Length: 144
Image (cartoon, rainbow, N blue to C red; front, side, top):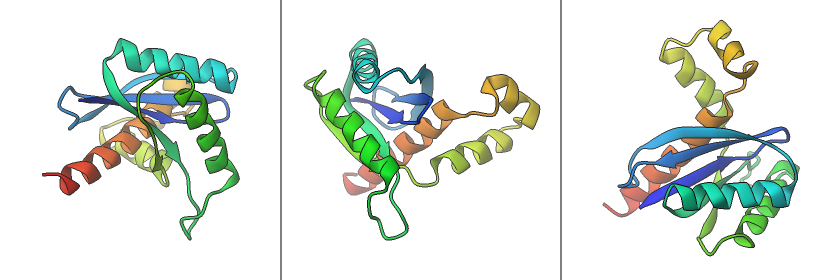
């Protein structure tokens, strides 16, 4: 089953999709933030278009695994997505996703200049990919 993941942000939302087996995450696109309902409709549409069976929304938690202002925003986005689709929508800890995306880009030979050309240094789709891969890995280990 394909899984779609969202890295929500104030200006952009990174989107990633898994392979058909739900094993490997890949970057899909970046959506410019409009409004919660418009964003939710776009996410639901992408999930349908790519045959996803569920949607993961990244939610940052603090050091004590407690919700933050940003994570409450993620929860509201998840609710808005639920109003647009019958697919399961799951919140997943995204802590460290942006840093991991930056490190992965560098490890793959991406320079600072290419990060800037890619979107003024933003790696939202790679952050969504990281979120999705951590989710897939956790569920593969839980259900071998």
